[in-house]
Length: 302
View 1 (cartoon, rainbow, N blue to C red):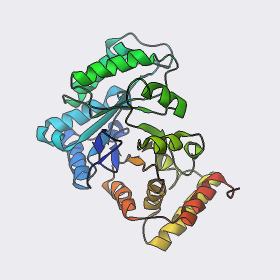
View 2: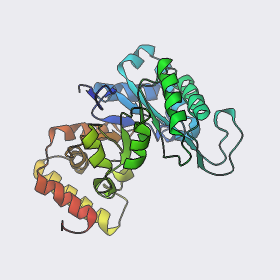
View 3: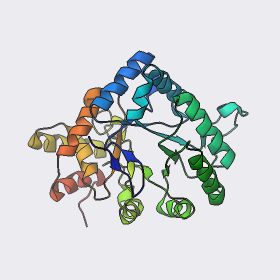
View 4: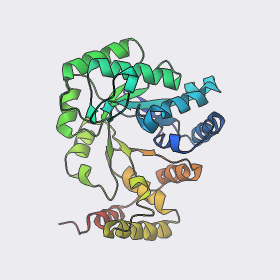
């Protein structure tokens, strides 16, 4: 797959990204992790989504250990990572343990987190850094100055956010250009269609990244709520009609939106990533898209 820019002047990423959130749970050796990375890249999935806190601050290190086995591979990959969440009880970046969960978008924390991520990932730059969650104490001027310094040092190439509202995005974007907003979207979580988030993405031509495109697998199995069963049934019937899998239909539903979302597919199974990639060859017509929307919302359009 060819790389595509998230926005004008933004990072060029693969149309489907691989999520590394659960990597610490997979129990792999560095060689097994390297094999997974290489298989993803062979599919055209060359963008990998991380966060400093994933796996209790271990996932970036596991990934970096794998890259160390084949250093030249880094030049074929794009690394996305996030910072800004301080979990309770975590001795993060050699700082004292925190007594409560909190957010930290201070310049000192962003800089320390980036330095730690660079060491763990064994790389000299982060292709795209995201603030993981909105921080209500965020000083936009301080964040902008910090990102500018990291960019001038070549340590961060592009900057964005995750889980920001449209107004929070506008506030920070006015101080420093944002490449994307990584958000949750799937037929069981439809809020971004109505709260202005995707309207803003389309207006600004900033492609959103989508985390949990399969609702952590609940679209396919495990969730027996009425909404999940309705969605699962429609995905199955559409998949049978089009000759593909329900997972591919779920990804195609996301890709159909005119904001041109970039889904993050988090799975150790290469077959699951193949299903995500296969969705790019599917085009759902409007009635089919709304059929899936209706299953998720539980009602017809007004």
